[in-house]
Image (cartoon, rainbow, N blue to C red; front, top):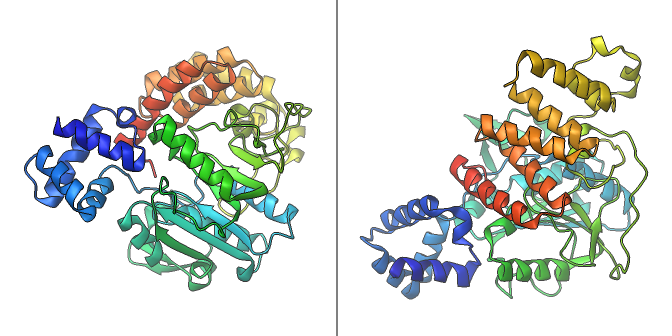
Length: 410
C-alpha cells in the first residue's frame, strides 16, 4: 500500500505515469531512493516524502535520467537557426529549455545561434529542470567527452579538461538555469515570454492530465508565431489548433499561430530532402543549411554520378529513392540481417510514402536489435501517420522503458 501511495504522490506532484516506466524500473528507482536516504522500506520512505520536501526531491532524482547530449536531434537546431534568421525583430531571441537536464540542450542552442551570426547579447536562454543535481551540473558547464556523442566542437566554444571540456564563458553567459517543476503554476512569471521552446522527452512520462497542464503552460508562455520543439516519441499535431508544423522543417517542430487555424494547411509540393527528415515527416520539407554539429545533405552535384558509384545511403540522401530502395534490397539478398541496411530501407520506404513497407522494415530492425531506439521512434511516428493511436501508445510506452533501461532519456 505504501508503494502505491508513493507512486500516487509522484503522480500528483510531478505528473509521473509510473506505468510508462515499467515495474522493474519503478522498483529499481525506489530501491535507489531508499538507499540514498538510508530508509529500510517504502512505508518509511513515504513518510519522509510527506514530512520533508528535501526527501521528496531526493526521491524524484531517482525517477529522472539526466542524460542528454549536444545537438541531439540536429534537424531541430537547423530549424532554430532558420527561425532566428527569418525573425530578425525577435532580439534578444528568448529560448526556453524544459526540461534542460544538465544543460546540453540549452548550450547547444546558444552555440548554434552564435555560429549563425547572432551576437551574444541577442541570445537569452533559460533552462529549467526538476533535478537539482542536473541544474548544478548545467550551471557548472563542465561535461565529459561522451556528451558530444562523437561529434567535434569548435575550440572557440569550449575549454579542454581532463576527460572532457568546459563551456567557454562567452557561451555560458547567454544561458541561465534554475530548478522547477513543470506542473508548478508558478513555474514561470507572467512576464516571462519566449520565442522558442524546447520541450523534448518529458510528455512521454506524464499522465494525460499532467501532459495537458504542461502544454497549456508552454502555449501560454510561447509568443504568437513562436517555435516549439517536441521530442522523438512525442507528436503535438493533435494538441489543438494553436500549433501547426513548421513549414520546411523537422516533423517535430511546430509554430504557434497568432490565431487558431480553422482548416488544415495544404501539404506542400514534394521537394528533394535528406531521407532522414522525409521518413518521419507527414509531408515533404524544404532543404536548409545545418548549423555546427549537424551533417549537411549530399550536394546536388553528386546526382550526376552513376548508381554503381553511390552507396544506398548516398542515393537516398541525393533524393534518388527508387535506386536507393533497389540497392538496399540487393544488399539484403546477400545479408538479410544487415540492420543498418534494413533501417535505411525503412527510411526510404517511409519517404516514398509506402508506410506498410516502412513499418515492416523498422519492425524487423527492432526484432534483430531490441535496443534500436531510432527504429522504435520511427515506428511510433508511422503509427501516428496511419491513424493508429492505440499502437502508437503501446510503442511509446515500450520506447520509454527502452530509453530508461539504456539511460538515454533526459
